[in-house]
Image (tube, rainbow, N blue to C red; front, top):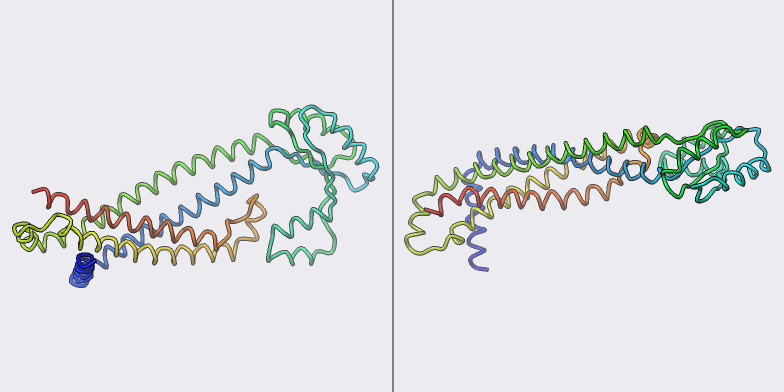
Length: 296
C-alpha cells in the first residue's frame, strides 16, 4: 500500500506538472469516446430494432374490413388453422390493438386518447411454425373475403437485416479504430512525461528500482486520465441520448419495433463500458510509452 500511495502521489504530481499536455490528452480521449459513444448508441438501438424485426418474422397480421362480422371472422380463423405451417391463430380487436399502441408509446400515450375515433381495424394474428411457410400462407389468405390488408413483407425485412449487419460491421471497425487512436494519444502524452524525467528514471534503475516501481506512476497517470475522460464522455453521450429520446422517441417509435433502449439502462451500461475502456486505454498507452525506455 505504501508503494501504491507513492506511485499515486507521483502520478498526480506528473499530471499537475504537465497541465497542458494532460488537458490536450484529456480532451482528445473525451472527443474520441464521444464519437465512439454515439456509434455505440446507434449499434445498440439497431440491434434492438433487429431483434424486434426477428420477433415479427413468425407473425402475419391480417387486417379485416369493418363490415366483417364476428361469426365471419371465426370462420376465417378456422379456415386459416387448416393451412400448413400455421402454429396459432388469434383475434385482435381494435380496442386491444389501441391499448398495445398506448403501451408502446409510453408517456406519449395520452395523444392517442385525443383521437375522436379508433382508427385501427380488427385483425387476425397468425403465428407460423416455420418462416418457410410464411409466403405460402400469405398467398392463401389474400384471396379470402373481408381482408383489407395482410401485413407481412419478408423481402423488405431481409433487406433491412442485411443493411443492419453492414452498419454493425462498419460501426465495429470504426470503434476499433477509435480505440487504437485513443491508445496512441495517451501513449504519446505519457511519452513526453517520460522523456522529461529520463535522467531521474536512469538513476532509479542504477540504484536497483524495479521496472514496475518506475512504471507505476506513469501507469496510474494514464489510468487517471482515461477514467476522467470516461466520466466526461459518459455524461456528454448520456445528455445527447436523453435529448434524442425525449424529442424524437415518439416519432421513431412508429418505425422501431421495440422503441428506443431505455435511457437508464443505456447510460448505466455506457458508464461501465467507458470506465473500463478508458482505464484500459490509459494503461495500455502508459505501458507502450514505457516499454522502449525500460528495455534498454
